[in-house]
Image 1 (cartoon, rainbow, N blue to C red):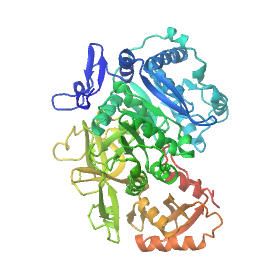
Image 2 (cartoon, rainbow, N blue to C red):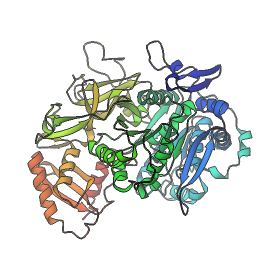
Image 3 (cartoon, rainbow, N blue to C red):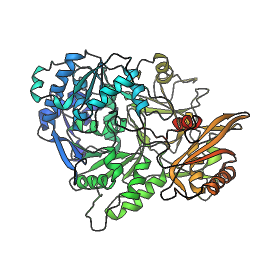
Length: 606
């Protein structure tokens, strides 16, 4: 099929085109009855024998073993698992997925939704360093049932025994013990477009994780927004992802093939971290047969450039690859490092698509045009912290690079707002990013007051709100600005450092820390404040770079303090240089500054 025609999806009355999901003004309007499950059913009916998901299993000896599942096979597994869910859970009950990465996870997630339950994509207790997050999510969601696998069943049951023992013990359903024949027991369930599909728990970078209620309307709308924005209309476009399936970006990589019967190749985050070349090889394999899209945060591209560059003559071909980088703020250094490393392997200069998204908006908010290259503007760092986007030359002593996240997706509206006055701000002014659209989640599970405050914000204006209904906006908690019609994301409100009445972005201080000494691991420094006798004081925790374990840190500490004072005018009261792997990170790999501050105050590093 030609790219211009759009992918075929099948409705109850026949084939549809993506264009049939657009109204006369080009706005996205889901046709009646379109849900995540109905999309999968259409794939089963029309491309049932085609591969839906492929999992590269690297746990055995030798290379990765590919395990594949067609759309028809997925349909059978969904009904079989769903039948077991229906025996213990009622419509609207939460069903958590606590399983390792793999096709069982994919089938379990979709099966819970098909059964009429609300899926809660989480992770097995084996994931190191995230027991508290799992505990918090389970206490919050209170699932009636848990979907897991034989490999981790014992760990799941032990977790409930020791961590959340006071809750009603959910029924444990072991996915890989359910025979296909159980599909005959499935009872068809009517699913509405405004029913909640799943609870997406936030990453916990700035606060404990909370569950966002994502409806089928939000899922369908957001997948179409992503497909249209990034030009994934060719049915031969497919995905490659190692992102965890409990993360919103990971779910999007199994969601977008459902719209038009494509497929995604998956692997585990561990497989990528241990050998990033596996990701590159999978992208190359996809690039040879069609367009391939992947998504990852800043650190993944830096890690692949450092440890995943193939040898000359390897045959790696990245000519048809689209790379979504979804961290906020996006790092131009990460983009350039990866581009330099992989340009010899056919990587296009416009392969990178800096993007912005968040769980409360299902995921996708904005990206650059399909044929555009990543764009940078250099701004005065001090003026930016004061709320003004003032251009300077890249050689200016206070220049900081900001990467454009492009244009807001179709049928989604954005306004930059003063978070204190709730008034819209003009282009070039930094404020909180507020959003509207059918892709926005319904609210936070079990948190009506937070839902009202975050999902039902109202602008203070003398007339109509810019570009949308004045009554209901999502407050993202993210700071950004508009310039030349494009959106730039500068950071989280909760992360802003304020010392002596002056504000600073932590990533700017952390970049100075990394430049100050060679023993600091780039991208692994956290800056935050602690309360002191005279107000808030700045603290830096930084991980050691490789092969520096025996280097005396004294001179590095002094160099960091001096550099931060000179560059930012802020004294650092304490610098802790810690072993690699010490600083907490979110499940998507972002610095968890709040958790790092908690560890510091608890005396974790002495």
